[in-house]
Image 1 (cartoon, one colour):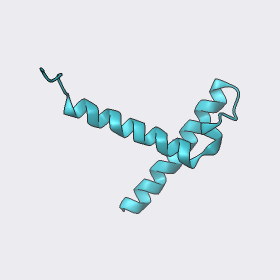
Image 2 (cartoon, one colour; image 1 turned 90 degrees about the horizontal axis):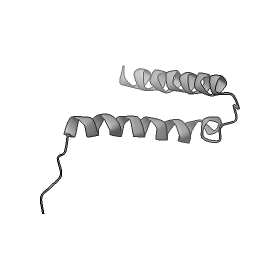
Image 3 (cartoon, one colour; image 1 turned 90 degrees about the vertical axis):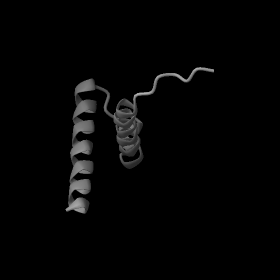
Length: 62
Protein backbone atom coordinates (compact mmCIF):
# COMPACT_ATOMS: atom_id res chain seq x y z
CA UNK A 1 0.00 0.00 0.00
CA UNK A 2 1.10 3.51 -0.78
CA UNK A 3 0.63 6.02 2.07
CA UNK A 4 -1.36 9.15 1.30
CA UNK A 5 0.27 12.55 1.29
CA UNK A 6 0.24 14.19 4.72
CA UNK A 7 0.73 17.88 5.40
CA UNK A 8 1.69 18.16 9.08
CA UNK A 9 1.32 21.95 9.23
CA UNK A 10 -2.19 21.87 7.76
CA UNK A 11 -3.14 19.12 10.21
CA UNK A 12 -1.87 21.22 13.16
CA UNK A 13 -3.93 24.22 12.09
CA UNK A 14 -7.06 22.13 11.56
CA UNK A 15 -6.59 20.48 14.96
CA UNK A 16 -6.32 23.86 16.69
CA UNK A 17 -9.56 25.04 15.09
CA UNK A 18 -11.39 21.83 16.02
CA UNK A 19 -10.18 22.08 19.63
CA UNK A 20 -11.24 25.73 19.77
CA UNK A 21 -14.79 24.97 18.64
CA UNK A 22 -14.94 21.99 21.01
CA UNK A 23 -13.94 24.29 23.86
CA UNK A 24 -16.55 26.84 22.77
CA UNK A 25 -19.29 24.23 22.77
CA UNK A 26 -18.22 22.77 26.11
CA UNK A 27 -17.86 26.13 27.86
CA UNK A 28 -20.83 28.00 26.45
CA UNK A 29 -24.05 26.04 26.34
CA UNK A 30 -25.96 28.75 24.52
CA UNK A 31 -23.63 28.37 21.53
CA UNK A 32 -23.90 24.58 21.45
CA UNK A 33 -27.70 24.69 21.64
CA UNK A 34 -27.97 27.83 19.47
CA UNK A 35 -30.29 29.94 21.60
CA UNK A 36 -29.81 32.90 19.27
CA UNK A 37 -32.10 32.55 16.29
CA UNK A 38 -30.58 35.13 13.97
CA UNK A 39 -27.20 34.58 12.40
CA UNK A 40 -26.07 38.07 13.46
CA UNK A 41 -26.74 37.37 17.15
CA UNK A 42 -25.21 33.91 16.91
CA UNK A 43 -22.00 35.31 15.40
CA UNK A 44 -21.89 37.99 18.10
CA UNK A 45 -22.08 35.31 20.81
CA UNK A 46 -19.31 33.31 19.15
CA UNK A 47 -17.13 36.42 19.06
CA UNK A 48 -17.82 37.25 22.70
CA UNK A 49 -17.08 33.69 23.78
CA UNK A 50 -13.89 33.65 21.72
CA UNK A 51 -12.67 36.85 23.35
CA UNK A 52 -13.47 35.42 26.77
CA UNK A 53 -11.55 32.21 26.05
CA UNK A 54 -8.65 34.22 24.65
CA UNK A 55 -8.54 36.38 27.81
CA UNK A 56 -8.52 33.29 30.03
CA UNK A 57 -5.70 31.81 27.98
CA UNK A 58 -3.74 35.06 27.92
CA UNK A 59 -4.03 35.53 31.70
CA UNK A 60 -2.92 31.98 32.42
CA UNK A 61 0.05 32.28 30.04
CA UNK A 62 1.28 35.58 31.50
